Image (cartoon, rainbow, N blue to C red; front, top):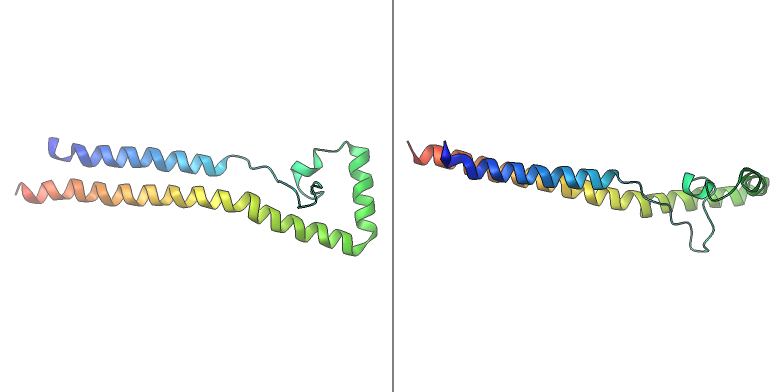
Amino acid sequence: MPEIRLGILVVVICAAFSIFFAVMSLMPKRFKGNHQGSRGLLHFSGIWGHNEAEYLEHMRVALDDRTTITEYMVSDIYHLSNDVLRPKFFWIRLSFYAFLSGLAASIILVVAPLFSSS
């Protein structure tokens, strides 16, 4: 049916955009660290910046003082949410919008010609 080609084209294009946005959400994001420029000791991107001896020493110092380790934990939670998860949810939201708008538009473009031809 040539009448529904436009609807099929719209759903394919929007599905491609949806997949692209979903893949962008899966791209690894680097932890930027806190405002003092120090690396997070509890996140993998902060850990790989040290060799094992340096990392163990930094952790030993942090664990000696309960306040220090608590500040590291709170800072890491904040930066993971703000720097890593916020961009991921942005791309996921775009993926859903692309999928839903393409689905709605294609349903209209496929169903409308079926009713007009009868």
